Length: 234
Image: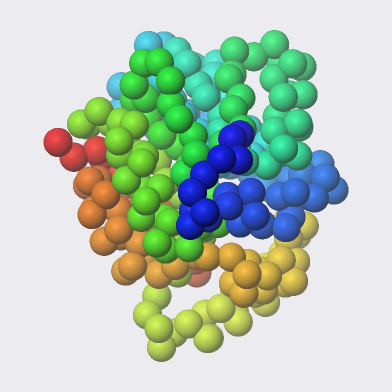
């Protein structure tokens, strides 16, 4: 990933979160997190994408989705700024003898080459950018897609009003600390305090301003996760 950028541009590597540069966290990530890759691939196939389609996974991490997608779509590119994540992903690519392309980059630096992307996929990554940069990232993603192309976006999003924030955040942190996934209350508190998740009622106007139509928006029961199926507008 090139490090040459204007002095005013955010450093993507510095904003991706402490844990994503921690080899211990990366080593255990697939034990702690399930991206539901098979379901996501099936969703894209139901939209008509197949062996001729180009898919770009921005913020691919260990590549749970990208590795699965590479078995079903014509070209899949996995993009992530973390050298630690990419080292693990490249090991998986070699072990599987996968056709997956792996690129170091991020929302603000990735330069797509070749045939236009048909789909962009991003899960639990956009929150690493403050809102100003989220809007730029969304515009860049729209520019990669033809009209009618899709952005499948999932993230930690605060799907509640300001006056609910304190009670909901406290309940979310307590619930994560009590589950069996391996995530802890400290992890949840760090996310809220140090990362850049935003309200749905701020994010969704940014999505539309970038040139997407919101085809579907699904919020988790605790109102902390949002899954969007976005359509590139003409």
